[in-house]
Image 1 (tube, rainbow, N blue to C red):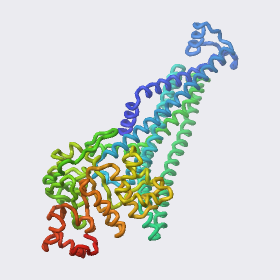
Image 2: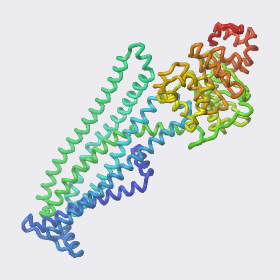
Image 3: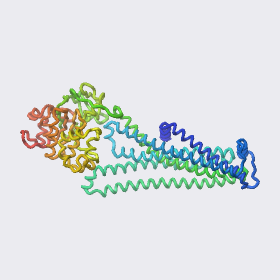
Image 4: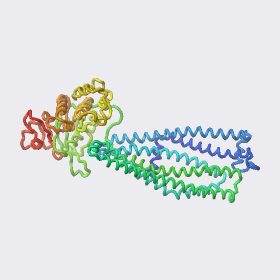
Length: 606
């Protein structure tokens, strides 16, 4: 019940005033419904429906005294008008309470969704890449939808419970002994059906797991759709999807069977207790006719509400695993939250002097037995171009992630113009332009892709960035120009065109540091030349860091770092390193069959 308590507490803390007003409205609705039931007594009296019925002690005499005190003479029109007025007021309040309920549900669900998304957005990069994207998407969409349904169930449960309590109090005023008998029967039924509540929670956990698998299947299929179609294995993916859907259907079917079985047992049990109720009312408690009618009406309304409470508890327990999943993800994200300010616009910083790595080490595993970067010491002067080379797994991408601030060194520090990177993380990231090998584009227009990170960019700045990236000519040649839709991940553009658009997007930020993470490794020689020309036009204007796969991207670099097993084993310019026959750089060049003479065709470096 701990997670249920947390759920209710968060719901209450979210909007205390609305919750209190909602509860008060429910209490008033319960009173009005109870008064409406009590109005049956004077209605029966004045209508003479049961011959010989007289005003007696108890609730009947109390109602008669009440009407006398307010100067109302009981008559059939008066009673009917009062009854209609009470029903009208009840319906109006019920409508307002339903609107308030909806507002609470939507607002609370929005709060949970935004709060969870914010936690994910500000979570540490290392944590995010260790989680499946499908799992995070599943919690943000599927589980939150189930949590929303749980809000409805909880508010309905509170409403029903309050009205039920008020009706029990009224029934107790009329026939305390008989009411105790009814309550005893309800307690016995509730205790008997508790196993079904536990079963509902178990099936809710299973439903969370199945939905997670379904999201994983869909995400992996869409991410690898080209390869799947190329290999002709669509049927295997369809079978996987169908199997998971069948399990979900079976889970829902079992839950429905549990609910209907609960309903069946509850109704049979209710029938037994109602029979005992009528027998006790007539033979044991000898209720007066008017009291018997009222207690019968209350009992007829009470049992369905008790059944509704039982069903509500099962639905809530079916939902609780979804709420637990959202809380666990949020807690995990908050535990690894980056030290970044939230909110609107933050200014970028200009690299004026140097970036300095001071004995920086980083390891992905907790035991720190295998460092991805080990004791890195180097300086990146502002306005220079630095290339980083090494075999796969040498630590090149990790070094760049440390430079961006996505990873935090476990040893040493990174200084930006003499100040720790951690103190200016947000401005530093705002000053970086990043281009990766996998050119990511959104499925929208070229214009929207370019201004995604700079929404206020004027037209002239957009074309200026395209010109710097050598992309203006091909964009001008498109039928819709900047408004051309690029398709999912830019599928309607060639690889070189996508890469140049991404480069233009990075340049539109007017970065102080441009990072090219194997940006030309998958391009043909013609597109590589275009990208390389664009990069060379930027030399001296920006601080450029290049993770290199081709000799053309590093031949004119101011300095080259050679990484091996996380360590910088060599550094210098191209001509210095290539002339050292025993250098690692020379060995890499030979391994890649790179011709050393100027003007020779340039091949892959790695």
